[in-house]
Image (cartoon, rainbow, N blue to C red):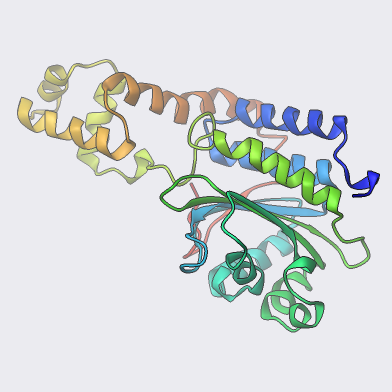
Length: 286
């Protein structure tokens, strides 16, 4: 291993500093993801970045995207990204096919050049319809398993044709970052694969609102004109939906998901103006 390929102490410090920034914004994926991607562009030296979450049991089928966010894309390039994910998706991208055949490690990080020969890549739809028009030639991708149920987080950093390919040190830095960040997803960092209050039925949303306002089950039942038995069934459904076992855990989960995000939103709006989430028929914005 060459000395230039080894991570430096400053690399590790900068990575942990960026992870700390993400934790500060962890109550809202649209905030911490765009901060992460813009920070990685600076940390690794990438022109543009995109990433998000989905469900993927590698080797057993294609990835099912849930969210995708970006940093560094201008409006035209963002439209190309959106169109590609809507019309083709990862199932039509040879890069994701190649990643699916890599040994099933918790974190897999590879430059495109290590996965697909140039001749195959330059003849692909993914390159000619999306990456080449956007000025993208080099890709560095990293996929991390977030949960045993197939939830994954993915990061894709890019460089142009006139720039150098990603080095072994770049690969190590992104893999180190992913390995340290991913255990926080679904904990200090809200995951887009987690159930959202917006997915609830109107009655369940009303029941949740009563609980968040401090009502007991009996008080909530009276406010909503429900029997205590029905209200208890709603509360049980909320526990099951959000993977908690008590009212205290439910309130803590909802505070982490929404309360902190509201406090941070105004202070981060300007910083994230150039990094926004995109959505399509196959990619849901959360």
